[in-house]
Image (cartoon, rainbow, N blue to C red; front, top):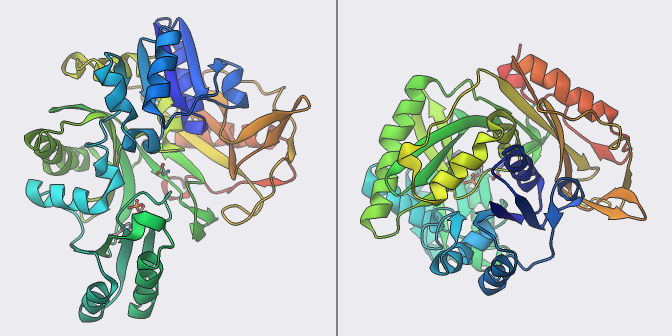
Length: 421
Ligand code: AMP
Ligand code: GLY
């Protein structure tokens, strides 16, 4: 089977690694890929937001299955174009991708499906939104309706902060994404990410994870795309998992079918859990990054069988074989991230790393320059490891971190602290 993966971050490196473990894969191309991916697969320059260009590339390269990593090509309808041309695609239609691309759409689906989530109100002008904030008081959460690269969610402790956030959003700080705004009740509890594959009405859980969004140790400082993750998430007990499936995932997926926009692909279910009750924080229509890295480390080669069954509408027959193991990934980022950071600093120590089915250094933002690996993004490397216990996975992940020679990089030293003694 010839496979094309769209994307070029740590998530796509982990997907490429798992796909390459499976003997079914004859050829793997990743567009655009990165330096780490280039060591295990062919990388290709391709405008992955251009459905026509992706179809042409898939035809020229005799591709049998396309796996879409990030949300932007999904929201742009790339999966739709590929499906119309007869390709097997892992990833939802643009209509179903609105579960990530529009927060008010997701809230409406939750209402129709009676799925537990934060109370909310939806606004298209600042005056009405501010009146709502003043009447209800703080704390609350102000969200740009559209895709804002993870930056469109502002947790407001006071009414003044909320009014400032509303001025920013309606003032165009997030471009078109902030033309509509959702204001939510602030939920307390513990967060977890739950990953399921979906094809229409069939839902298959494939794992849980927790990530660390704040840049600083002890979960302090500004939000990032994620500084590390571990799987499984201890808070996701069997009872909570069952409730999340019965009360949130299955009813909302049934509502999507009822509306004529069945979901197909991986669904990232962001949950807030308090007093034994899960509530939906958000849906994403793709794997999380870096959560994907720990899921792939645990699933290994079977990830391809599952992705293929999902893309071909055979999820009802698919089974996951669970190992009783744990995985952790630690993000190495460029100093200054998530603010301004230097690009082009040289990273050493990568050649000698011992990598196997328990240890992988996934690349997130690297390029090659004059024969050296240099940093090209904020989040640059993902030291990822698996073990019989989370403590073992942690020791292995940090051993990988310590083997890297990159003075201009940093990482959090406390990934997994909530789950470890
Ligand atoms: P989102 O982009 O919707 O995932 O939001 C980013 C983060 O903001 C989430 O992971 C939560 O930590 C937090 N968040 C979003 N909505 C709420 C809410 N209603 N109550 C509390 N925290 C929230
Ligand atoms: N790690 C969070 C995300 O991928 O959205």
